Image (tube, rainbow, N blue to C red; front, side, top):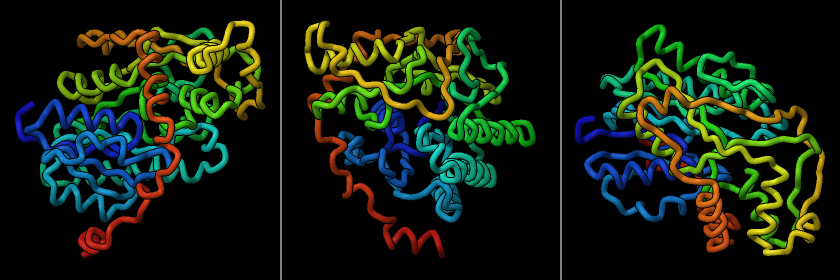
Length: 346
C-alpha cells in the first residue's frame, strides 16, 4: 500500500482491537490510525497508553451505531481502510440480551458499510473480523471457508448476519470487503469474562476455576500477536470478496486448561489441582469444538508462530504483573464530549 493512508479501526480499545491499533501505529508511522470505540465495560483506554501520545493516532469515543457520527468520520477524515472489530462478543450475555447483540453486531455493521460506501473517497479495504462460531460446533467436521453457516447462539447468529451484509456489498457494488473467521484469540489485556483470563482472575482471588458443564469441550487457541499478523497480511495480500479462516492447531480441552492454569497461578502439586476446580451449570447451547482449516491464509505465507507454552506463559505473566488492570475502569466510560456531539449534529 501507498504511504499516508488513513485507517479506521472500530472497537480499537478492546482486546484484539487495541493490539491491532498498536501494531498499525508502530509499524506505519506515516499512516493515520483512528480508533472509534464507545469504551464499553470490556474496553479500556489504558490498553493504548503506549501510543496515546503518538502523532499518527487519534481516538474518537463513540458508538458505531451512531450514523451521524460514523458519516461525519467518513465525510471528514478521508478513510482508506476499515478494520471492523466493534462487537458484543460474550456468548453467555447474548442469551440474556440478544437485542443488544443484534443492535451492535448487525445494525452497527450496516451503519458502517453504508457510510463507507457512500463516502466520496474510494475505500481500499473493508476488513470484517468475524468468528469461527458462525460454523456451529461439530465434534468431527473440520470447517473451511465454504462450510455452511450454522450459528447456534445469539452471538454467532448476529456475526453471521453481519457477514451476510458485508458480502452483499461485494456482490452488489464490488465493495472491497474481506472477512476473517478466527479461533479463540487470547493474550494480555483480554477482559476477564473470557475463559483464560477468567480462570487466571478467579485463581488470583483465591477462588476456584469454574468449569461449565461436564461435556468434553475443547477450543483452539490462537495468540493475539499471530492474529494481528494475519490481519495485517490480509490487508496487504488478501483478495477482495474472500473469506479467510485464521486459526491454530493448538486444541486444548477446557478441563486441561483449568488444570494448567491452577498449576501456573497457584503453583500447587498435582494432588491438589482438583481442589481448585468447580463444575457449574452449562450455558443453554453447547458446542464441543470449532476445528477450522487455514490453508487459504497459509498460502499467502501466514503461520501461527507463537507456541502454546510461550503464549500462555506471556499471558499469565501479564495478569500477574497487572492484577488491578480491570478492577476500576470508570474513568474510561464517560459520555461522548459535548464538542464532538455538537459537530456531528450540525
